Length: 457
Image (cartoon, rainbow, N blue to C red; front, side):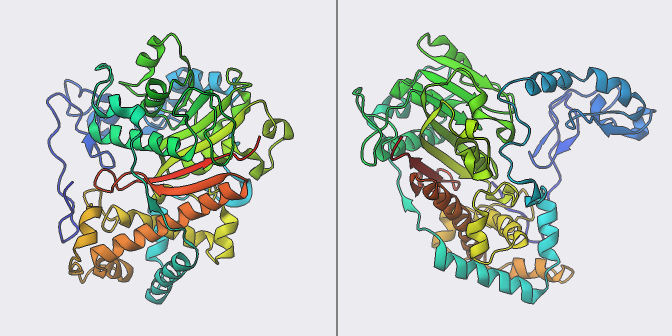
């Protein structure tokens, strides 16, 4: 990725492919996928009001990802394609609105723009004090993350590329998947052989099912099926993806697959009929921001005072392996171990500032989607601070004056503190847990794995 220009200005978007809508998606850094109208450079959803000859377009209240003419809104809501799916989901026994989202009094969702604005409202002394507090808390409380890049022998056919060519193969992703399951095997969550074993602190568990949270295309589960013979599979993913592992998994007659298109926030795991009575592993690769906290709450729900029936359901959690990422999206409302932060004197506002700073670990100053720091590079080279623009506000000028390597270091400190709280939460729940760096940062800078297992059932 290229870095942002020194003056902080973003380069203009490239021209779209012929016939493609000219609407630019800055976060995804691409144009809208729909075709443009014959009479315009835009599709119907993004046709400028001046060119449409009609009234104002507003977001659909059922699915805000698209817009409709305000005058047609009432009629559209009744037939929006998403409405039936939402109604069908709400009728499912495993749907419970916001069940894993945290306590209602814990605050509201804070956007990245709001986090940034709050940081920029600090005085220079308050900003310096906050950075000093982060360094102090990190030195006193953060758990050291050990490196653990390991590939199990069972994954040889994946690492060698000898897999079904119907499954898209990308070496860097396969290395991550293989190391996650390699760490699971080394930690005792997967068996090397076929013998039945009991759950304990130093032996492997005997899992019968896997639930992959934030499954995306489901290739982490595919590795477990292909290399470890897992037979019951549950993929939890709110979005719809192309080129997903479902097709390959469904062709395997020995595998039972259920794909749950639901937000983790709303999933009551004990409402799912199929896995009842099974011992299961909860896994997730690159669970963005609060998805990690909500997954832990979903699997260990008594933290938020859920019903006794849900806590003591017929599912038996054997272990957890969650690769965290996108700490800048974390929310106080969802964070599992708020008491850990509060005991360290970190307030809700300071937590949200920390989450915003955490992006410095992979993005130089979080001021532009084009700005990226090679994490490997920052460890060996100390770059000169950027020359601040005299027109910049005080805090922005201070941020840009911090050397890139130092900003990255502060970002990693924030990630360490956030993941340490999660690790201690799992240990408090009675699990044996660890936090490891499961791949080198040149494979992925988002390389943290929370791994835990039960010690008794």
